[in-house]
Image 1: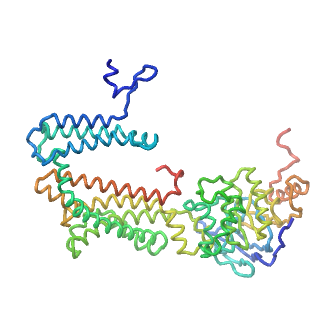
Image 2: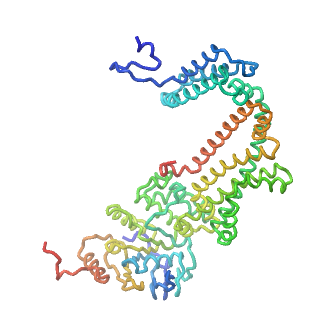
Image 3: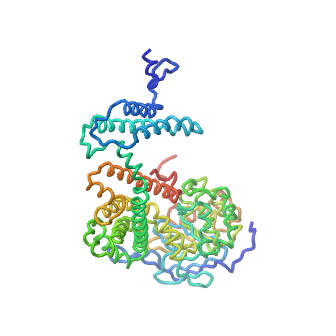
Length: 332
Length: 267
């Protein structure tokens, strides 16, 4: 009887031993969250939203957790989806707890910790402004800064790696300027650049330039000389060697440099937007904070999390494509 | 079993009075090579043999143009060697395949570097076939065994159709059986391509099995001690009395023959 009642959590095995079943927990977690959201009365301390966004959200989540495993085309695909089931269940439960703590009983100050309903409401109602205006502006700044910094870093690194005079003049520059956190330049950048936007591009480029040039030069300096000897015996001239031997051989380290550059550029972007640039997600968050609308602050944070997560994922995809030759050679 | 007519006018190496000194950390100079005189005729197979420190690899690097001689001149077909070039192919003990290129692109590297790939790309397949790697073009180097990697490195050096192939202990890292297979492979390639080959080796049997002449070198300072012609007909067997007597002569010259009159232990 007990076994029968607990069937979602336990499955009867042929040998009559109970084995915990971890499948479909996410669906149960979503259902539980939905039931509690509908049946528990709100405390009334949180400003109500126009529509019950959290209920919509939980219904969509519940539907997805049921449909996705069922709609899987192959058993492997289904196993892959279900492998993350426990994690999704935990995440949904966390949202459930958060909802109870903020919306239902309001155990923490409503002004700083808005109900999930209100955050989702901002994401819905301010979607156009958040994505089309703020995210687009941040993206433009980030892309411009990142690529100019990466290009400058590659050029500097290759120059140091291949030319002794360049190493003589540039190495001390990197050693002295590099470790200064890019944001420490803000007081100078604000007065030295014609627009704050140009200054912000410079700061982001600076934060990408340092790790990229350091890693590129050390990547090239660590290439075994034999590769250059072999290539010159195969008829390769200097420039051909730089592009076809030195840079490809240094690629793994170049990507390490670009990765830490990317991480530091996110930081610089947010700081630059909060301090000087009057647009973008960072500026939005700061602006909303000053107006004490914390639901908008959280919505901004969620947008940032998803955008940066997507950028990092994209970065790793590109890296895996470029470094496909390392497959089976190095465990990442 | 000479299958192609021997073209002795191409691939002639002339080494005249070559010495090479390296700076020592204490400020003095180390004489790695002293007054080497050697002429290698076109299509000849020559082995450089001797204990470590005898300068055989140094000499090979000078011929490759990777280092410059302190004194003396090196010439290929009358032209002074003053740097690495595609006409002198090179293969090391470590194959040094470019790990970021698959085998096809490794072999094609020389064609691309010389900007003739578009015209000659059919050669890549031919040379992969020549070394028995026809099916491995798309594979990356770290998936290949030691012997296969060495074949790929030979194909990569040979695709430029060099006049001279320089081999620095190319089979040193291979196990005994792969090694003997690869020795036959090198002889087969040589009978097809008929180019001058100069090989550095530690292995006396390998030197006799492959070479027309064995250059015996001794250290301190590195110099050519003796040049022995190998008069054995090809194909050669590794166990004929002539082979074995040549072997003991080389070991005697190198002072490694051992002393049979005072056995260390009774069998």
